[in-house]
Length: 615
Image: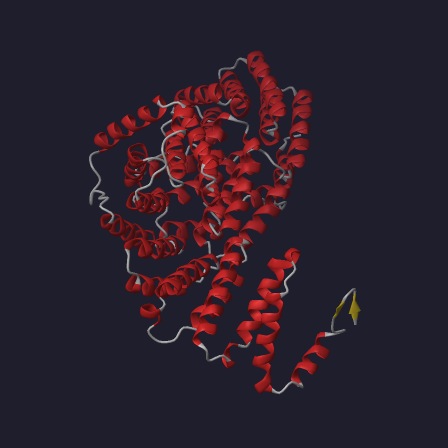
């Protein structure tokens, strides 16, 4: 069948029948002839597509080739095809070409063709990592480490193997191996962390130094040229991620060492990760001014050095960190999505999925429609499972459960950690993985949903459990002020329903924190502060002042796009009127709350509200 100036078989089966007529002993020669003809006559506008076709044809003919120079040329073509496929994020395709190149080696190839061997094996290990074939990564990395002539060449294999251990959640093994690699680079981390006061003094010295350097001055620093220091930075940047989740006491030490190397020896691509991580940790110390400035430095380095392979890591620390505090949450969501997309393109699947998980959580916190959030959870969850990102998938499950509980519409819409076999199984699974951050997330999201459904005793118990867990952690889960806000609402709700003042006494600290958060991120916290103040006035019996605060909170939440918290403010105002026997006004505010919950997508909560309104 003619298609323009070309001809094509009408059907695949016709092509297969025609191919079967060619004698088997002639097929290899024919494939080679076709491959070389394509290579010789590739039009410039079809180089990418036809190059792969040509190499594939040559690979099918290699069995008939016994000439060493021809075989080596084809191995180099497979290396080139693998590199090109990796650059296009076609990782499975890259793996097939690189494996084909490796399979063509004869005995003693490491001695006879070292450069080609190290290039093929190193890139093959990275391709296998990108398609989550971690067992093969370990096997190939072992071969490279044993055969490589220089530490720099072994270091590339170490990095790939360490990343595979991290994705498999073998964090202790990843950290131990990273420490070993660093020691070979003459970068020694303490076997036991120094006293916290020593670490804090070093941390303060580092952040002061960074903030004294102007933006332009920092970006004009010389670029790092010492290959051993660059190798150390490449290794330290891996350690930052793993010490965030395990051996958290080492995280500030690793960041300090990375920044010190940058200040002493110049900037490199990995510097943007170290600086971004510093910004992220400063948020947890509530140094928001410093975090914003240093976060800007990290993005400046990223852009100056065109370090696209680290964009995913920098964005999760900045747009999932400080910029969530100082800008409206919704303004960060698109950048987190970009971090996910770039990570997938560059083969940094793990950080791509961290961006996706943060995208989901911030979508929930910012009041995006729950049905849309649910669809994105299903999409990203499927990709996480397909890419063997089990740890990141577990980190998203608390948000997934919260969305499901709010959407669900049954006679008993809330099935929480206290009485849910599924939730308990999830909690046990996370505890078994020894990841306190994920356990805290279960308490945070479950507590929010329990509060929204007016199960205040359960919500309070979950807050208390989170506080107990955080006593043994190096940091608390602030969630851009979300945990403080809902904690305050829960304590005040308990105070409404109790003659004891123990719950109300906890609100003072919460209120001072939310006031501070409102000063650095007004669009995220203005309505939160007003609603807490309204609840305090209501608790004190100041009906008129409370109503004014409720109305201001409703208006601020609407202005800044927090529809779910606008609904909550309406419901609390309705509660105030109901306690004062004003059923007309109570009905009005309950009706508005019901409408807003439906717009948010919380069908389960809307139905629960209808069932529990006492008139």
